[in-house]
Length: 132
Image (tube, rainbow, N blue to C red):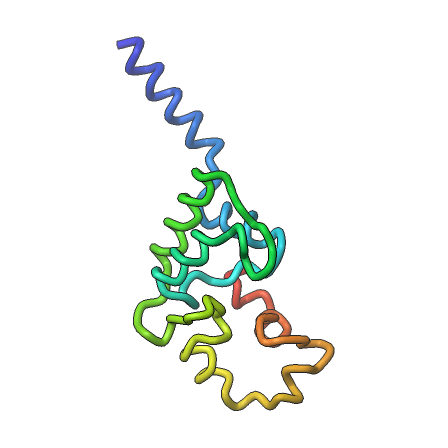
């Protein structure tokens, strides 16, 4: 009986200190850039992206294996489904969905100093795009 209580206590204490997967994703991905919402890429794209963190758009963003697996699981569980969320370049801005959604934005708007580039979602959408 004592071993069962000890086991349960250990599990509860472990869970109390665990960071939810979504918080871990925001913490790790958000330390360098906007933590892009998982539904903006397909599960396969997230698999490729997280598998190549040693060359993550010109930077080494390698994580510990358990953190990588945890974040990848979260990203894949919440990934977009369908071809509109696939990108050969693994860039959200190259997905058919992004191009269709933003087709009315002029080149001039993209280079506005307040916007800077296509990946600066919060310039136009604010923090709500990230679920804050």
